[in-house]
Length: 204
Image 1 (tube, rainbow, N blue to C red):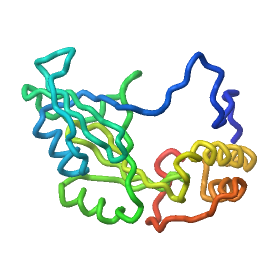
Image 2 (tube, one colour):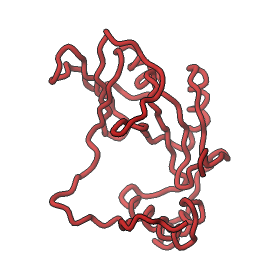
Image 3 (cartoon, rainbow, N blue to C red):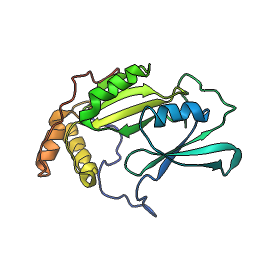
Image 4 (cartoon, helix red, strand yellow):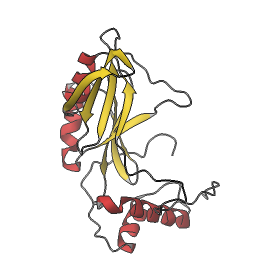
């Protein structure tokens, strides 16, 4: 399949008036503190590192969680709000949050989700491997493990190279052969993690 979008896929910085230097934090609307802590702190294991009033609306509390690498997820909560079910789908809405997990913890993660009564799906997404579940409000949460060892400072370069190889291969999405080819082309070792077999997911 050839891409119709002419936008270049490249790790090079675009010609823009300025460039961001990373993700500082993401903030989502939450329900109440108890349910939010039960999911993000007690199940996903994110430390609660700051709690203060929402400075735009002091009737709400602003919870700050460390997602594991110093990058922060924050949640606005209020004890007046009950947890809801069902993903909200509309333009501008958040489709899902994705957090990195270690490949060797995959089986433990699935067991913990099952023990907590959380449903989940497992997919092989070609460039990474993912477990999908939902938080206490129905927001889709993805727990993703890289299928290959990739230096953090070269991830964009590897993905952009895999994209070029995918296009040359006329493939629908980047697969193992494209990732392995990208690593080899860039002179990086091809070390694949031991992850369970899984389908690519619906729609592919």
